[in-house]
Image (tube, rainbow, N blue to C red; front, side, top):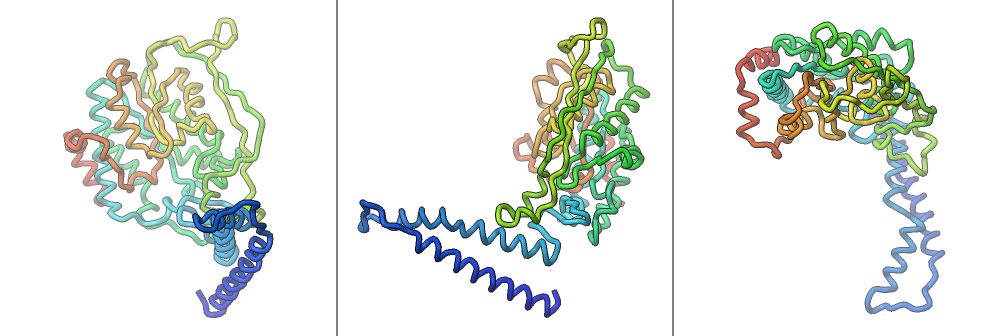
Length: 380
């Protein structure tokens, strides 16, 4: 920060303090004594405190003021978001170096290999859907931000490691890049893809599965219908605490048109309940798959022409839902033919809290035959 800018920042800070002080006088002067009160037990103090908090939420005001200063002067938000150009917001997980990233990467790749081997032991095929980072797909909106060297190479390294482990992982970046002219593929103010982005990925996965695997059961027809478009306030805006005082500074909400996929009875054209009691496909992943706003599971049903069981979860990354699925009763009692594992690339070098799982079982997954090839790839 230059000296003139530092002086300006200090001046704005002092001005904000004066503003808060003057505003606080309103809360003091507008206070009226209650008809009945007690001084000895603190009752009077409590009524004054309650009135003052309602008139002047100091913490909220201070948060709004500092967020506005950081946003206007430096183009910055709270930790968790990076502000790009044209009101685009990005998760800082796609940029910042991760402590112990290389070791985390090796551990996670070993677990991925262990998952593949565990599924193979049950005669279940695995397709890995490596979701490219939003920053990788839209570098033109990054402004001055640049990813770390590891993050820049991450998508390619992930695919190399998957191929080395014999895991099917279709390229999703190329089809997404080719489809950018069709419309937004990621939300401008959110970490997630749009229904169009999810549709492009589902189409690519459906084509890859049809080329390598003959799914059991009769094909089903699915149709997807678009709903009304509405403003959507993305999850990254929560790292810009400008509301309510400076809400007008926030990036405009994204227009989001939700989609819904349903099965159709091919004979009558009427809506049909899913006929198969045993579903041939299971989807596991993150909020990219779990959140119905993007309709990824629905798009997969349409392009696979099969129903599926969705075991994706919000807020737990891709590994934990998969480990939970491996220990689930559903897998034991009704194993699918195919598991599609949606895995955003940014999670690969991140540490995972595996304390809810048996350490011996985790170690067994990591130590399965063939993991050395993944570890060698990850260490390059």
